[in-house]
Length: 391
Image (cartoon, rainbow, N blue to C red; front, side):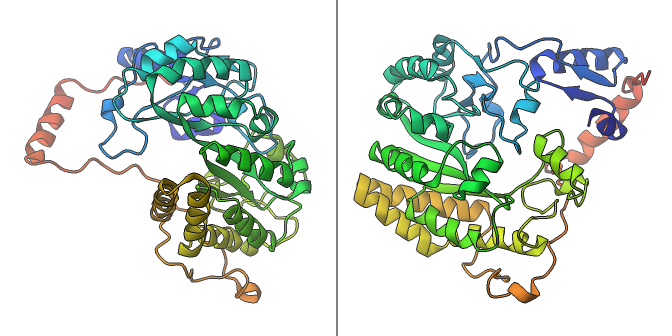
Protein backbone atom coordinates (compact mmCIF):
# COMPACT_ATOMS: atom_id res chain seq x y z
CA UNK A 1 0.00 0.00 0.00
CA UNK A 2 2.71 2.63 0.76
CA UNK A 3 4.27 2.02 -2.67
CA UNK A 4 0.88 2.59 -4.27
CA UNK A 5 0.06 5.63 -2.14
CA UNK A 6 3.32 7.43 -2.96
CA UNK A 7 2.20 7.64 -6.59
CA UNK A 8 -0.44 10.11 -5.46
CA UNK A 9 1.41 12.05 -2.76
CA UNK A 10 4.69 13.74 -1.91
CA UNK A 11 5.19 11.61 1.19
CA UNK A 12 3.53 8.71 3.02
CA UNK A 13 3.29 8.45 6.81
CA UNK A 14 3.13 4.89 8.18
CA UNK A 15 2.29 4.28 11.81
CA UNK A 16 1.27 6.51 14.69
CA UNK A 17 1.60 10.25 14.28
CA UNK A 18 3.52 11.17 17.42
CA UNK A 19 6.79 9.76 16.07
CA UNK A 20 6.29 10.47 12.37
CA UNK A 21 4.46 13.74 11.70
CA UNK A 22 6.97 15.98 13.59
CA UNK A 23 9.80 14.54 11.45
CA UNK A 24 7.81 15.10 8.28
CA UNK A 25 7.08 18.74 9.19
CA UNK A 26 10.69 19.40 10.08
CA UNK A 27 11.93 17.91 6.81
CA UNK A 28 9.30 19.87 4.89
CA UNK A 29 10.57 23.14 6.38
CA UNK A 30 14.10 22.21 5.28
CA UNK A 31 12.97 21.15 1.79
CA UNK A 32 14.13 17.57 2.11
CA UNK A 33 11.04 15.45 2.59
CA UNK A 34 11.46 11.70 2.41
CA UNK A 35 9.04 9.47 0.55
CA UNK A 36 8.18 7.43 3.64
CA UNK A 37 8.08 8.04 7.36
CA UNK A 38 7.74 5.00 9.62
CA UNK A 39 7.46 4.98 13.40
CA UNK A 40 10.85 3.82 14.72
CA UNK A 41 9.50 2.28 17.93
CA UNK A 42 6.36 1.95 20.00
CA UNK A 43 4.62 5.05 21.33
CA UNK A 44 4.64 4.57 25.09
CA UNK A 45 2.94 7.82 26.13
CA UNK A 46 0.49 9.86 24.09
CA UNK A 47 -1.60 12.98 24.69
CA UNK A 48 0.90 14.25 27.24
CA UNK A 49 -0.47 17.69 26.39
CA UNK A 50 -4.24 18.21 26.16
CA UNK A 51 -5.46 17.87 22.56
CA UNK A 52 -6.86 21.03 20.90
CA UNK A 53 -10.51 20.16 21.50
CA UNK A 54 -11.32 23.84 20.94
CA UNK A 55 -10.54 23.44 17.23
CA UNK A 56 -13.56 21.18 16.78
CA UNK A 57 -16.68 23.04 15.63
CA UNK A 58 -19.50 23.81 18.02
CA UNK A 59 -22.12 21.09 17.90
CA UNK A 60 -19.53 18.39 17.14
CA UNK A 61 -20.95 15.20 18.62
CA UNK A 62 -17.98 14.18 20.77
CA UNK A 63 -15.77 17.19 21.43
CA UNK A 64 -14.42 15.77 24.69
CA UNK A 65 -12.67 12.66 23.39
CA UNK A 66 -9.48 10.75 24.17
CA UNK A 67 -7.98 7.26 24.30
CA UNK A 68 -6.87 5.46 27.44
CA UNK A 69 -5.54 2.44 25.55
CA UNK A 70 -4.28 1.52 22.10
CA UNK A 71 -4.60 -1.79 20.31
CA UNK A 72 -6.87 -4.81 20.40
CA UNK A 73 -6.19 -8.35 21.56
CA UNK A 74 -8.47 -9.90 18.95
CA UNK A 75 -7.66 -10.85 15.35
CA UNK A 76 -10.99 -10.92 13.54
CA UNK A 77 -10.26 -11.88 9.94
CA UNK A 78 -11.88 -8.77 8.42
CA UNK A 79 -10.49 -6.21 10.86
CA UNK A 80 -7.59 -3.87 10.10
CA UNK A 81 -7.22 -2.24 13.52
CA UNK A 82 -4.24 -4.28 14.68
CA UNK A 83 -2.58 -3.75 11.28
CA UNK A 84 -2.94 0.02 11.56
CA UNK A 85 -1.34 -0.11 15.01
CA UNK A 86 1.90 -1.85 14.11
CA UNK A 87 0.55 -5.20 12.92
CA UNK A 88 0.01 -6.28 16.51
CA UNK A 89 3.74 -6.06 17.25
CA UNK A 90 3.18 -3.42 19.90
CA UNK A 91 0.50 -5.24 21.84
CA UNK A 92 -2.17 -3.64 23.98
CA UNK A 93 -0.92 -0.38 25.53
CA UNK A 94 -2.42 1.49 28.48
CA UNK A 95 -2.11 4.98 29.88
CA UNK A 96 -1.86 5.19 33.66
CA UNK A 97 -5.39 5.92 34.98
CA UNK A 98 -4.05 8.98 36.82
CA UNK A 99 -2.89 10.46 33.48
CA UNK A 100 -6.29 9.76 31.93
CA UNK A 101 -8.05 11.53 34.79
CA UNK A 102 -5.83 14.60 34.41
CA UNK A 103 -7.02 14.96 30.82
CA UNK A 104 -10.67 14.33 31.67
CA UNK A 105 -10.53 16.99 34.38
CA UNK A 106 -9.69 19.54 31.67
CA UNK A 107 -12.86 18.70 29.70
CA UNK A 108 -15.85 21.00 30.06
CA UNK A 109 -18.69 18.87 28.67
CA UNK A 110 -20.85 16.38 30.60
CA UNK A 111 -20.01 13.43 28.32
CA UNK A 112 -16.59 11.92 27.63
CA UNK A 113 -15.92 9.68 24.64
CA UNK A 114 -13.14 7.09 24.89
CA UNK A 115 -12.21 6.22 21.30
CA UNK A 116 -10.40 3.06 22.40
CA UNK A 117 -10.78 0.02 20.19
CA UNK A 118 -11.50 -2.16 23.21
CA UNK A 119 -11.42 -0.61 26.66
CA UNK A 120 -12.00 -4.06 28.20
CA UNK A 121 -9.03 -5.92 26.74
CA UNK A 122 -7.45 -5.85 30.21
CA UNK A 123 -10.23 -6.16 32.84
CA UNK A 124 -7.85 -5.38 35.71
CA UNK A 125 -6.86 -2.11 34.04
CA UNK A 126 -10.52 -1.28 33.37
CA UNK A 127 -11.30 -1.64 37.09
CA UNK A 128 -8.46 0.76 37.95
CA UNK A 129 -9.65 3.25 35.35
CA UNK A 130 -13.24 3.06 36.61
CA UNK A 131 -12.10 3.67 40.18
CA UNK A 132 -10.19 6.75 39.01
CA UNK A 133 -13.12 8.05 36.91
CA UNK A 134 -15.83 7.56 39.54
CA UNK A 135 -15.07 10.68 41.66
CA UNK A 136 -15.29 12.93 38.58
CA UNK A 137 -19.03 12.31 38.20
CA UNK A 138 -18.81 12.37 34.40
CA UNK A 139 -20.84 10.28 31.98
CA UNK A 140 -18.73 8.42 29.45
CA UNK A 141 -18.91 5.81 26.68
CA UNK A 142 -16.45 3.67 24.75
CA UNK A 143 -16.02 0.72 22.41
CA UNK A 144 -15.84 -2.59 24.25
CA UNK A 145 -15.47 -6.21 23.26
CA UNK A 146 -18.69 -8.19 23.51
CA UNK A 147 -16.61 -11.24 24.44
CA UNK A 148 -15.05 -9.56 27.48
CA UNK A 149 -18.40 -8.10 28.58
CA UNK A 150 -20.02 -11.53 28.31
CA UNK A 151 -17.32 -13.28 30.30
CA UNK A 152 -16.84 -10.57 32.94
CA UNK A 153 -20.42 -9.67 33.98
CA UNK A 154 -19.18 -8.55 37.39
CA UNK A 155 -17.60 -5.55 35.65
CA UNK A 156 -20.94 -4.09 34.58
CA UNK A 157 -21.78 -2.63 37.98
CA UNK A 158 -18.28 -1.16 38.22
CA UNK A 159 -18.66 0.41 34.77
CA UNK A 160 -22.05 1.89 35.65
CA UNK A 161 -20.86 3.36 38.96
CA UNK A 162 -17.89 5.00 37.24
CA UNK A 163 -20.22 6.87 34.86
CA UNK A 164 -20.41 4.53 31.84
CA UNK A 165 -23.74 5.27 30.16
CA UNK A 166 -23.26 3.60 26.77
CA UNK A 167 -20.97 1.20 24.95
CA UNK A 168 -20.36 0.30 21.32
CA UNK A 169 -19.62 -3.32 20.52
CA UNK A 170 -19.13 -5.30 17.34
CA UNK A 171 -21.85 -7.95 17.36
CA UNK A 172 -21.29 -8.45 13.59
CA UNK A 173 -23.83 -11.26 13.08
CA UNK A 174 -26.35 -13.51 14.83
CA UNK A 175 -25.51 -16.37 12.46
CA UNK A 176 -23.36 -18.84 14.41
CA UNK A 177 -21.48 -20.16 11.36
CA UNK A 178 -20.72 -16.59 10.29
CA UNK A 179 -19.30 -15.72 13.70
CA UNK A 180 -17.03 -18.76 13.62
CA UNK A 181 -15.85 -17.94 10.11
CA UNK A 182 -14.37 -14.59 11.22
CA UNK A 183 -12.96 -15.94 14.52
CA UNK A 184 -15.69 -14.45 16.72
CA UNK A 185 -16.07 -16.51 19.90
CA UNK A 186 -19.70 -15.62 20.65
CA UNK A 187 -23.24 -16.76 19.86
CA UNK A 188 -26.65 -15.12 19.47
CA UNK A 189 -27.80 -16.69 22.75
CA UNK A 190 -24.79 -15.33 24.60
CA UNK A 191 -25.43 -11.89 23.05
CA UNK A 192 -29.04 -11.93 24.26
CA UNK A 193 -28.02 -12.79 27.83
CA UNK A 194 -25.30 -10.17 27.80
CA UNK A 195 -27.54 -7.41 26.42
CA UNK A 196 -30.12 -8.05 29.15
CA UNK A 197 -27.47 -7.76 31.86
CA UNK A 198 -26.12 -4.53 30.36
CA UNK A 199 -29.60 -3.02 30.08
CA UNK A 200 -30.31 -4.04 33.68
CA UNK A 201 -27.54 -1.61 34.63
CA UNK A 202 -29.14 1.15 32.54
CA UNK A 203 -26.27 1.16 30.02
CA UNK A 204 -27.15 1.70 26.35
CA UNK A 205 -25.75 -0.50 23.59
CA UNK A 206 -24.76 0.70 20.12
CA UNK A 207 -23.89 -2.30 17.97
CA UNK A 208 -21.98 -2.94 14.78
CA UNK A 209 -23.29 -5.43 12.19
CA UNK A 210 -21.38 -6.79 9.18
CA UNK A 211 -23.62 -7.73 6.25
CA UNK A 212 -22.67 -10.39 3.73
CA UNK A 213 -20.58 -12.92 5.63
CA UNK A 214 -20.22 -16.18 3.73
CA UNK A 215 -22.84 -18.18 5.64
CA UNK A 216 -25.58 -15.56 5.21
CA UNK A 217 -28.16 -15.22 2.47
CA UNK A 218 -30.63 -12.49 1.57
CA UNK A 219 -33.08 -13.53 4.30
CA UNK A 220 -30.58 -12.83 7.08
CA UNK A 221 -31.22 -9.10 6.69
CA UNK A 222 -34.80 -9.51 7.90
CA UNK A 223 -33.86 -11.82 10.78
CA UNK A 224 -31.06 -9.53 11.98
CA UNK A 225 -33.12 -6.32 11.79
CA UNK A 226 -35.96 -7.96 13.74
CA UNK A 227 -33.49 -9.29 16.34
CA UNK A 228 -31.80 -5.90 16.79
CA UNK A 229 -35.20 -4.25 17.35
CA UNK A 230 -36.27 -6.94 19.81
CA UNK A 231 -33.03 -6.49 21.77
CA UNK A 232 -33.79 -2.80 22.31
CA UNK A 233 -30.49 -1.52 20.95
CA UNK A 234 -30.02 2.25 21.16
CA UNK A 235 -28.30 2.33 17.78
CA UNK A 236 -26.54 0.20 15.22
CA UNK A 237 -24.05 0.65 12.40
CA UNK A 238 -24.77 -1.58 9.40
CA UNK A 239 -21.80 -2.13 7.11
CA UNK A 240 -21.20 -4.36 4.11
CA UNK A 241 -18.31 -6.74 4.77
CA UNK A 242 -15.23 -5.06 3.33
CA UNK A 243 -11.97 -7.05 2.97
CA UNK A 244 -9.42 -4.31 3.57
CA UNK A 245 -6.01 -4.91 1.99
CA UNK A 246 -3.59 -6.51 4.40
CA UNK A 247 -6.26 -8.43 6.30
CA UNK A 248 -6.47 -12.21 6.26
CA UNK A 249 -9.91 -11.97 4.69
CA UNK A 250 -8.56 -9.98 1.73
CA UNK A 251 -5.81 -12.55 1.18
CA UNK A 252 -8.32 -15.43 1.23
CA UNK A 253 -10.80 -13.76 -1.13
CA UNK A 254 -8.02 -12.67 -3.47
CA UNK A 255 -6.69 -16.22 -3.69
CA UNK A 256 -10.21 -17.48 -4.42
CA UNK A 257 -10.67 -14.95 -7.22
CA UNK A 258 -13.57 -13.27 -5.41
CA UNK A 259 -12.25 -9.70 -5.21
CA UNK A 260 -14.27 -7.66 -7.71
CA UNK A 261 -12.31 -4.42 -7.59
CA UNK A 262 -9.23 -2.87 -6.05
CA UNK A 263 -10.56 0.64 -6.47
CA UNK A 264 -10.10 1.70 -2.85
CA UNK A 265 -12.73 4.42 -3.27
CA UNK A 266 -15.30 1.62 -3.05
CA UNK A 267 -13.89 0.22 0.21
CA UNK A 268 -16.22 2.24 2.43
CA UNK A 269 -18.48 -0.40 3.93
CA UNK A 270 -21.29 0.91 1.75
CA UNK A 271 -20.37 -0.94 -1.47
CA UNK A 272 -19.84 -4.59 -2.42
CA UNK A 273 -16.24 -5.18 -3.51
CA UNK A 274 -16.20 -9.01 -3.49
CA UNK A 275 -18.37 -11.83 -4.80
CA UNK A 276 -20.76 -12.94 -2.00
CA UNK A 277 -21.14 -16.67 -1.37
CA UNK A 278 -24.91 -17.04 -0.98
CA UNK A 279 -26.41 -13.99 -2.68
CA UNK A 280 -25.81 -11.67 -5.58
CA UNK A 281 -23.93 -8.40 -5.40
CA UNK A 282 -27.22 -6.54 -5.88
CA UNK A 283 -28.96 -8.48 -3.12
CA UNK A 284 -26.18 -7.67 -0.66
CA UNK A 285 -26.05 -4.00 -1.63
CA UNK A 286 -29.79 -3.37 -1.43
CA UNK A 287 -30.33 -5.80 1.45
CA UNK A 288 -27.86 -3.83 3.56
CA UNK A 289 -29.79 -0.65 2.82
CA UNK A 290 -33.08 -2.37 3.59
CA UNK A 291 -31.86 -3.62 7.01
CA UNK A 292 -30.60 -0.17 7.97
CA UNK A 293 -33.87 1.42 6.89
CA UNK A 294 -35.93 -1.13 8.83
CA UNK A 295 -33.96 -0.67 12.04
CA UNK A 296 -34.29 3.12 11.83
CA UNK A 297 -37.93 3.13 10.77
CA UNK A 298 -40.25 5.08 13.08
CA UNK A 299 -41.89 1.78 14.02
CA UNK A 300 -38.62 0.20 15.17
CA UNK A 301 -37.50 3.34 17.02
CA UNK A 302 -40.84 3.47 18.83
CA UNK A 303 -40.74 -0.21 19.78
CA UNK A 304 -37.22 0.06 21.16
CA UNK A 305 -37.97 3.28 23.05
CA UNK A 306 -41.05 1.82 24.74
CA UNK A 307 -39.22 -1.40 25.59
CA UNK A 308 -36.29 0.39 27.22
CA UNK A 309 -38.61 2.83 29.05
CA UNK A 310 -40.48 -0.11 30.60
CA UNK A 311 -37.14 -1.52 31.76
CA UNK A 312 -35.20 1.59 32.81
CA UNK A 313 -37.70 4.42 33.22
CA UNK A 314 -39.25 7.25 31.23
CA UNK A 315 -35.88 8.86 30.48
CA UNK A 316 -35.07 6.00 28.10
CA UNK A 317 -38.14 6.84 26.02
CA UNK A 318 -36.59 10.20 25.17
CA UNK A 319 -33.06 8.80 24.97
CA UNK A 320 -33.76 5.96 22.51
CA UNK A 321 -36.06 8.15 20.42
CA UNK A 322 -33.36 10.84 20.24
CA UNK A 323 -30.71 8.29 19.28
CA UNK A 324 -32.90 6.83 16.57
CA UNK A 325 -33.79 10.20 15.05
CA UNK A 326 -30.14 11.25 15.22
CA UNK A 327 -29.01 8.16 13.33
CA UNK A 328 -31.80 8.67 10.76
CA UNK A 329 -30.46 12.15 10.10
CA UNK A 330 -26.84 10.98 9.95
CA UNK A 331 -27.68 8.20 7.48
CA UNK A 332 -29.98 10.49 5.46
CA UNK A 333 -32.97 8.18 5.96
CA UNK A 334 -35.61 10.75 5.09
CA UNK A 335 -38.41 8.28 4.35
CA UNK A 336 -39.38 4.88 5.70
CA UNK A 337 -40.06 3.52 2.20
CA UNK A 338 -36.81 3.23 0.21
CA UNK A 339 -37.03 3.30 -3.60
CA UNK A 340 -35.69 -0.26 -3.75
CA UNK A 341 -36.95 -3.06 -1.50
CA UNK A 342 -34.67 -6.11 -1.64
CA UNK A 343 -37.59 -8.49 -1.07
CA UNK A 344 -40.25 -6.77 -3.18
CA UNK A 345 -37.84 -6.16 -6.07
CA UNK A 346 -35.85 -9.40 -5.74
CA UNK A 347 -36.09 -10.34 -9.42
CA UNK A 348 -35.20 -6.95 -10.85
CA UNK A 349 -32.76 -5.26 -8.50
CA UNK A 350 -30.79 -2.40 -10.07
CA UNK A 351 -26.97 -2.47 -9.93
CA UNK A 352 -25.24 -0.91 -6.95
CA UNK A 353 -24.50 2.78 -7.17
CA UNK A 354 -21.04 3.93 -8.17
CA UNK A 355 -18.83 5.07 -5.27
CA UNK A 356 -17.94 8.73 -5.12
CA UNK A 357 -14.51 9.72 -3.82
CA UNK A 358 -14.77 11.99 -0.80
CA UNK A 359 -13.39 15.47 -1.23
CA UNK A 360 -12.63 17.67 1.73
CA UNK A 361 -14.67 20.86 1.29
CA UNK A 362 -12.81 24.09 0.76
CA UNK A 363 -13.12 26.61 3.63
CA UNK A 364 -15.97 29.07 3.06
CA UNK A 365 -15.00 32.39 1.54
CA UNK A 366 -14.83 35.21 4.05
CA UNK A 367 -15.44 38.90 3.59
CA UNK A 368 -12.65 40.63 1.70
CA UNK A 369 -11.25 37.22 0.78
CA UNK A 370 -10.24 38.64 -2.62
CA UNK A 371 -7.82 40.94 -0.75
CA UNK A 372 -6.34 38.20 1.45
CA UNK A 373 -6.05 35.84 -1.53
CA UNK A 374 -4.07 38.46 -3.40
CA UNK A 375 -1.77 39.01 -0.40
CA UNK A 376 -1.17 35.25 -0.18
CA UNK A 377 -0.22 35.17 -3.87
CA UNK A 378 2.27 38.00 -3.40
CA UNK A 379 3.70 36.37 -0.28
CA UNK A 380 4.23 33.08 -2.11
CA UNK A 381 6.28 34.87 -4.77
CA UNK A 382 8.53 36.45 -2.17
CA UNK A 383 8.82 33.28 -0.08
CA UNK A 384 8.15 30.27 -2.35
CA UNK A 385 7.23 26.86 -1.03
CA UNK A 386 10.30 24.70 -0.28
CA UNK A 387 11.18 22.25 -2.99
CA UNK A 388 10.62 18.58 -2.21
CA UNK A 389 13.54 16.22 -2.57
CA UNK A 390 12.26 13.03 -4.24
CA UNK A 391 15.53 11.21 -3.86
